[in-house]
Amino acid sequence: MDKYNILVIGGGPAAITIAKTVQGKMSVGIIRPENHSMIYCAMPYVIEGLLPFEKTLKKDAIVTEAKASLIRDTVSKVNFDAKTVTTVKNVEISYDKLVIATGATPILPPIPGRNLDGVMTFKTEKDLQKIMGLVNSGLKKAVVVGAGAIGIELAQALNERMVETHLVDMADYILPNMVDYEIVEETQESLIKSGINLHLKSKVTSLGGTDKVEEVLLENTQIIHFDQMDHCSEAGAAALPGLVVFAVGMKPNLELFAGTDLKIEQDGIVVDNKLATNIKCVYAAGDCCQFTSGITGKIVSGKLATNAVPMARVLANNFLGGNRAYPGFFNGTATKIGDFYIGGTGFSENTAGKHFDIEVGYAEFTTAFPIMPGTTKVRLKLIADRKTHRIIGGQFVSGKPVTDKVDKITMAIQYGITLEQLINFSYSAQPYQSFYPAHNLIVKAAENILNKINS
Ligand SMILES: Cc1cc2nc3c(=O)[nH]c(=O)nc-3n(C[C@H](O)[C@H](O)[C@H](O)COP(=O)(O)OP(=O)(O)OC[C@H]3O[C@@H](n4cnc5c(N)ncnc54)[C@H](O)[C@@H]3O)c2cc1C
Image 1 (cartoon, rainbow, N blue to C red):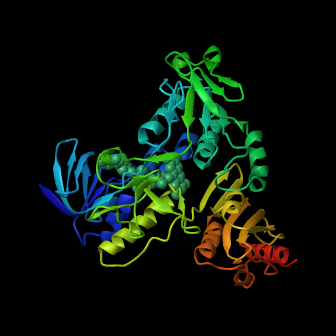
Image 2 (image 1 turned 180 degrees about the horizontal axis):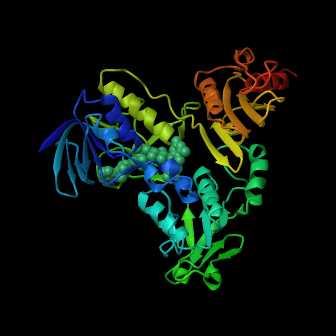
Image 3 (image 1 turned 90 degrees about the vertical axis):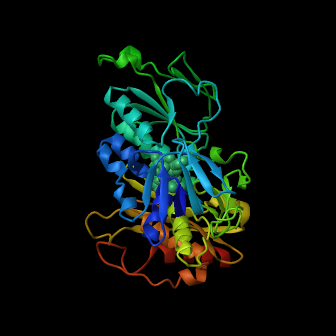
């Protein structure tokens, strides 16, 4: 029986990070069912035609060159007492330390019609191939359910490929978990202008059809019909099903542990800040875990690669003798909608208001000196706690990328920076890369909040 110092179940970003960090200083086995690990974030851009499919496949060398063993298999049973796992190929493998990094699967809501042909979620290589196959065969119409970043990126890709695209969400504006309405108002209009049919305040209640999905029924009695078969000119296109893709959230992959003593709650495996589970020598990292907000210490969802990788880094460094602790989710995220880059971190005004007595501030400048060519607007909404003056959220919209700006606000939130500290924040300026030295977006927004609090 093979034995590893560290055996990882899963082959996603969390597992890869363990292998890359340990670098052969301990023996690492990575058990993964897929032929390839995927760059999930890039999948919409393959559908859009910006990237060839092969670019989304990660090379196995990332793992093997880090001197870890890659085992193509699926774990079907874990024996925590014997410290072994058994795979579907009936191989038994033994471990000193087990890392569960089984990730999460997109949710397909339990509504009538969910099993019809053409109804799917969007995560795997197979999902990507299926959607690309349909689009390349002349798909005429698609419905994407969920106007979060993944749903919007997919909807834009389909729209770019001349598929009549309907984007449906229960919320009254897009990206409701990332930003507040005022930050996306203009962007939402641009999404509609691009040709996407946006159905807000609309819950999908059921899907109709005999074998293939033929219609999507919304709570407000509206029905989206897949009538493209009548108008299709391409040979064979009449046989195409409609396409309904749900991008409405993720649930952790934990069926493997049913009936075991592993402590699992609603959002995943319960771990402490060293990523240890309740079972000796068993750890977990990434989307399969439940964790707490770095702001409130209360459980918050954070199924992001930018949470999975740092969790795994903490764990792997501790295996090598370190004593790091995972600080919690801050959930900095970003997306691109048409010509707009949008990003948010910490809590939105809506969410922050449930935990804190908040004040918000705004600033709007340009991404370069206004006299320079190619300058666009950048707007910040900053959210702070009136009592402690600490920053608890920030949101950007701009014509230029915003992730670096989002990360700056995350740093302020994470390290307890106050408004008084931010107004003295020392910044840089250059004609192509910032507003005039005369002002800075973060300083201005912080001043705006302080003025409101003090007035
Ligand atoms: C379309 C899309 C776009 C995204 N965009 C972004 C983005 O822009 N930014 C961002 O931060 N995040 C993004 N994410 C989220 C990000 O991909 C996930 O948070 C990340 O992949 C989680 O990593 P993980 O290693 O925890 O799990 P996963 O990547 O889900 O990997 C889990 C692995 O475990 C394996 N596994 C499960 N069960 C078993 C078993 N029994 N035996 C063996 N192996 C098993 C799976 O097959 C898989 O290989 C996106 C996700 C999607 C789907």
